[in-house]
Length: 188
Image (tube, rainbow, N blue to C red; front, top):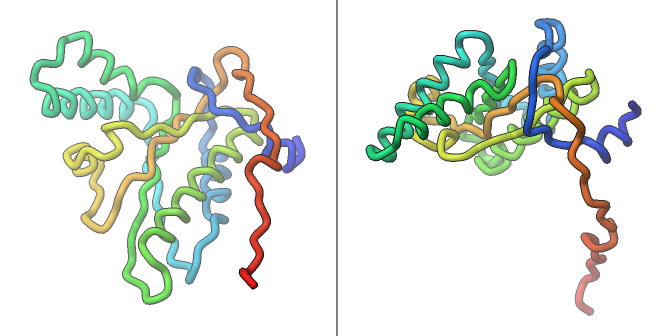
């Protein structure tokens, strides 16, 4: 697949299955992320790889977090929370690592980490895999972030679920690029 087709046709895959990327392919995904725009070369990101038994452990973290947020959560709700970590053979938690810098505001650093996440999704698709970027309460819950060992100067961009597409790609609407473009001119 050529680069422009990849950029124009990438599509989130909510249903993923085995196989997931090999260790060498995971290295390729991360190398793609490292090419994200990065003002002042701060490298404002890091990546937590979660696979195998660690996915079950993360599911337990999600269930405990749900119970803290909602002490009335049912057993079915807790099972659903646990299953979120089993949606794909590989989860990559993308973390923004903030640095004080006179020319690079924190928002720009977060956007750079978001670009790194998008680079991973594009690389996964280029390798024949699929993925989806998810956030939700578990991406912002301070106790989940603590269990993931995020520092106070870090935040979670989201969880990238990576694996093989289960089923067909969902159809995406075709948008007219002209609907999203206008030309600016200085007032005279």
